[in-house]
Image (cartoon, rainbow, N blue to C red; front, side, top):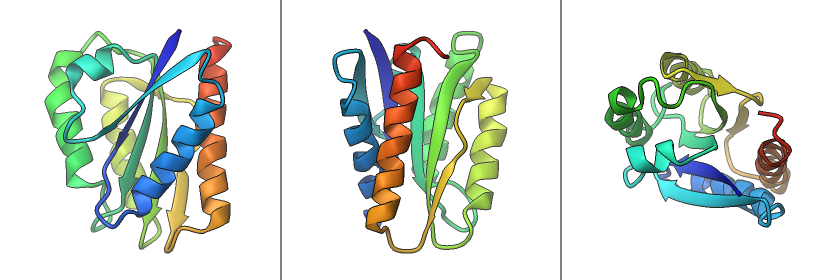
Length: 152
């Protein structure tokens, strides 16, 4: 069975809503993909090393990713070197602005691991709608499906 690690940071609850929706999508393939969903401040190197794919969810704070997600990267970067090369990942961003700054920051750090982005980032601007939740669920299901069939 493959393991998908969902690491999220959420202060207002919008990002958690998106992460939970993505988790529902991943759960559609529960017989083939196990989900480990953790707040960024609780996720660590062991979680990352046991993952077959990674889903990151962050709010956009001041045009950047959440500090908690940056902390996850800071704590795992050096211990992960040479051990997660090419790990597939996708990204969810809850943005009050346009979200591009958070996306660029995550992508820059991900290239350093190096992780492999396998799906375009989902950026949700403003209040989370039913359509946004459906898109997050679809992203989770798509990531899980690709993982389950060995696409990445």
